[in-house]
Length: 183
Image 1 (tube, rainbow, N blue to C red):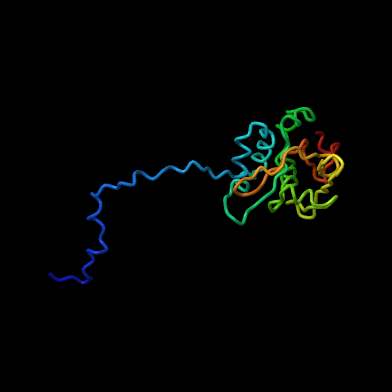
Image 2 (cartoon, rainbow, N blue to C red):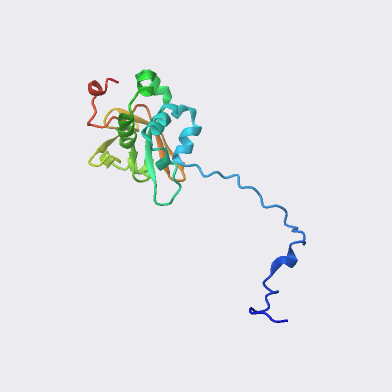
């Protein structure tokens, strides 16, 4: 018998296909990779902010699962939003306004609560170029505020691509004013 390649039976594993695997089936992984966007979608208290993220077209960014794309999101709770805003004003918001609000409420890196509380006051840059948020810590009552009026209610909800901090109001970019946007 002639062949142009060598005898490869030792590497041919066809003879093992009919042997039973006594280890059992491979267990299904119960761990789900929670991205920021999947956490937003799964939490009913983030419905309106999730709506803004989708309207702004940023859902793909916060759904990425690469090791280099990590973000911090300051997400307002719906419990507080419905007290301060007309729901229709959020639903009827244009794409540009939604995009600016979401970008102003997000940072290009993960920042956890111990870092936010590490200084009495600091500025952190947002995803809008040239824009920053003032973080103030009031030591007497342990409250952390953003831009002087938005309080962090719950911090460090960790996802695979970032972290969420729950706040009690929308963060408005400095370029917007309430009178200009009619909200």
